[in-house]
Image (tube, rainbow, N blue to C red; front, top):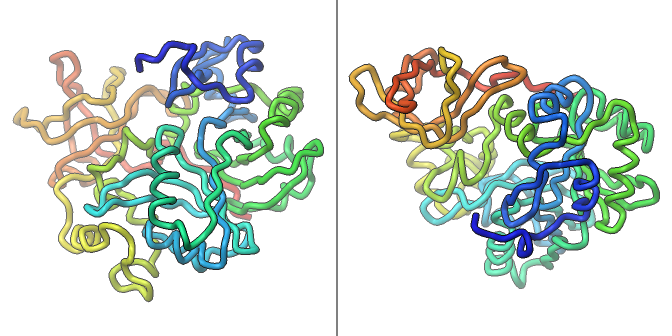
Length: 376
C-alpha cells in the first residue's frame, strides 16, 4: 500500500499504541500495530495462555433500525436473520449475483428492531454503499465508523478480567451479545472473537475507548496484541481472512463455508434463496465445485506463504496457498489453500513450490488448534 503515514487513518487508541512501543504498519488504510516489543510469538502464546487485548477499531460498525430490517438484510445474505434471537450474533456473508463473497460480517440482534453489523475494515465503505443501495427505504442505516471503537479481549483469562468490571459477562455464552456498562461507558459486548479462544468483542464509544483499554491493560493477565499475532491465531483456528481466503471470485461452497448458510435459506429450506447468487450457490452445492479451501500441513519446517503454487506428484499445478505461516501453538508451519477438488480428501499428499523446491504437505482438517469457545 503506497499510502504515506500522513494519509493513514488512526484509531482512537493510536497514541496508546505508540506509548506501548508498537511497531506500526499500514493496514486497510489505517496505521495499525503489527506487534509490540514482546514480539508476535510471545503475544500469540500469551493470548492462548492468559488474555490479549486487540484494537480492532478499524473495522466498520453499522446499525440497522426498523421493523423490516431483518427481512431486508436477508435479501443480501444467505443467513437466517429473521429468526436470530434477541441477544445473539451470527456470522454472515454478503454475496454478489454470481455467488461470490463481497465481504463477511457479524450480525447481532439488539432487540427493538435493531441490528448491529460489524464488517471488515477494507470493505466497510463499499459495504455501507451496498446496504444503502439495496436497503434504503426498508430500514434506517446508521454507520458508526467514527463514533465507536472496537476492542477484542481474547484468551482463557478474558472472562475473569472482564467480569471484574461487569460481573454479568461471565454468564454469557459463545455468540451472545448484550449492552454492558464498562467504566460508565455504554458498550455492546459479544462473547466471540477471531482467535479460536474464549473471549469478548467490546464496542465502546470512541472517546471512552482509551480509558477502557488502559484499565484492561492494568490487569495482570492482559497484554496488548498486534495484527501479527491476530493473524497467526486466526490461522491456527482455521478462520478466513477476507481478501485472502475468500473474495468476489470465490463462493461460500468453494470457501468451505457451507455451514454458514442457514438451513432455512438453503435450496430445501422454508425461505430458500432470495439472496444474490442463490441459484449459482445451490448449483455448486448440488453438483460440486472444481476447487475448495482446505487446511495444509507442511511436512518440513519451511513456512509456506500466500500465493505459493501447489502441485501434485507429477508437478501439475493443482492449487494455490491463500494463507500461510508459522503456528506458535501448533509448533510448526501451517497453511490454507484452494485445491482442485480431486485433491481435497484428508491426508492427500501435495507439494508447495517454495523457491524452486518441492515442500511436501498433507491436506488436513481444520482448525489446526482446537477452538475453545465457551458454550455453557
